[in-house]
Length: 133
Image 1 (cartoon, rainbow, N blue to C red):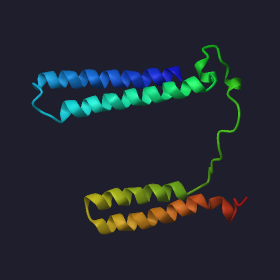
Image 2 (image 1 turned 180 degrees about the vertical axis):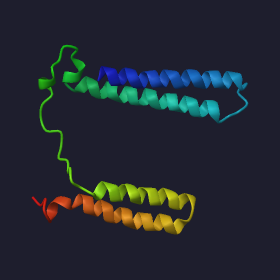
Image 3 (image 1 turned 90 degrees about the vertical axis):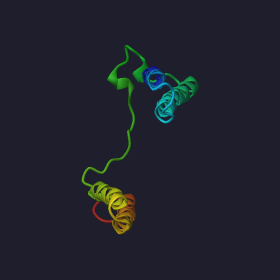
Image 4 (image 1 turned 60 degrees about the vertical axis):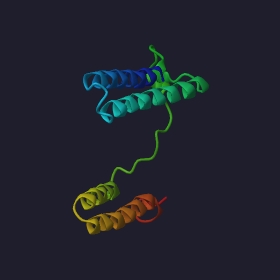
């Protein structure tokens, strides 16, 4: 996890530095910008700390070995449904929800109903029909 820790710590350093620079340039008068940038930096540090704390308790991953081989990373990655149409309907329902928040709430309500339908369909896809287990 060394790469991930360094990445998120770098994000934290960048945003804190930019937040301090922004505060200096705005004479610390504008209260939202430098605070938000420093909070983004804190979020980067928080994720880096979490990954560091979890990485201490886990064994080293094959990705952390510089001389590691692809064969060392084995095992199942999960079950994927290559012929599923449910993610499309879920994405369309999310689009309707965000459009409805911007335009009219009845569109968001329709998108929410469609989203519940799509999540149920995607969840129970393997319980009936051609791909039933």
